[in-house]
Every structure is written in C-alpha cells, then in structure tokens.
Length: 90
Image (cartoon, rainbow, N blue to C red; front, side, top):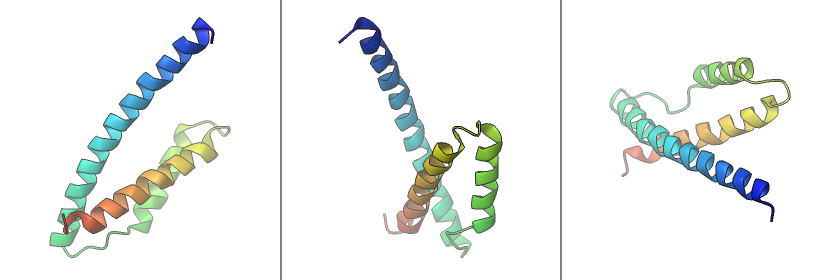
C-alpha cells in the first residue's frame, strides 16, 4: 500500500470519527425531541419538516452529490424517528 493511499485512508478515518461523534450528538437531541413530542402529544412523523430538510440538503450540495446526500439524510431521519419512538420507553 502506498504512503499516499494510507494517508488518505487515515484522513477518511478521522472524518468518519467526526461524523459518528456528530451522529451521537444528533441522536441525543432526537431523544429530547421525542420526549417533548410525547409530553405535547405530538406525532413523531412531521412530513413538512422532512420535506424542508430535503430541500435544504438539495440547496447545499452539488447535483452530482445530491442523490447520495439525500440518501444519507433519509438514514439520519429514520434513525431520529426510531429514537423518538422509543425515547419514552428508555
């Protein structure tokens, strides 16, 4: 393996670590949102919020990256919904 490849892989590993730290933070906030929604008797699913997030992502990435960014957003939103649905059970 070349030094350049190893260096680039280490950079990816560092970025991944940051992403997972942010994911943990996002999940903690999603739990708080779930608790709030439970207290206020609000539905976990908020289609208008999800649509707004999709539009925000589309506006923030190139056309080339858009499908991948939207796929990532779906994963994040699905994880948040799952956490919100189970937040009151934890």
